[in-house]
Image (cartoon, rainbow, N blue to C red):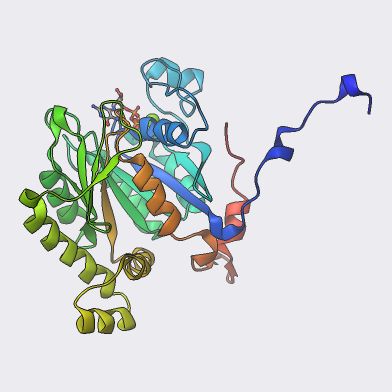
Length: 320
Ligand SMILES: Nc1nc2c(ncn2[C@@H]2O[C@H](COP(=O)(O)OP(=O)(O)OP(=O)(O)O)[C@@H](O)[C@H]2O)c(=O)[nH]1
Ligand SMILES: [Mg+2]
């Protein structure tokens, strides 16, 4: 081929990932809870885009359609991808408006894990319940993200209490905010027993020891989390009874099993707008959320089964 006619194929430079290192998630939740903003933040944090767009500025990667610009909200499900550490995370950003809930169904079909976002100042909304009904049909693992913790009326505890009321005892606190509202910048992580402290612009937090004033609460919630991880596996439960504790890796094993059995819906803290919390969420998706090959085979309508990894390959190509 003559040099001047050569057009490099960008796909040649693409990294390849084995199925274990590909995670397929779908962002779900009520209208305006922050799904598109979170998707944009995840792409930015991973370095796929150099500047974060805003829904209001009509320049997010996900809400690219003219109709979405006109309406100022998502109208279609959009497939995106990002990379975090050695994993590829395929993301489907769905619209939250009640009359567009049909858009979530094909997304639920191909995703392996649902990330259900709750708005920390509205709690569980009618739109959340509507999407939850659809999620029930597909029985996927669920991660809950409590977003907008920077909002003046944010109330994490009330939001989690409502989530437990609506979705049951599987709702499990993995993180809690030390401060919320305008001053939100510290999150205590109960798996790592670390406090993440964010600067004004968000991004990568500093890790600090849990302050003495929070230790009693953090220890008690950590114990609940360990018990939740242990209850899914006899060997882990025995180990827990012997040692009175599980290490981080053991907890990850138990939490993964809990997610797959849907006895555990881990809850994360987020401010998508201020870029706080998305890195830790992506790390958890990498290390704990199941990949397509770990998920049970799909039952087919006419009988037989289909491997989940094959369902994934049939999904639409990622943007950007
Ligand atoms: N304060 C605050 N505002 C946020 C946050 N995340 C999103 N928003 C704002 O909430 C509004 C809706 O955000 P979107 O990202 O479009 O929400 P969505 O869930 O994608 O909405 P639909 O596509 O309509 O379902 C926008 O004005 C965002 O700037 C957050 O963490 N904190
Ligand atoms: Mg949206």
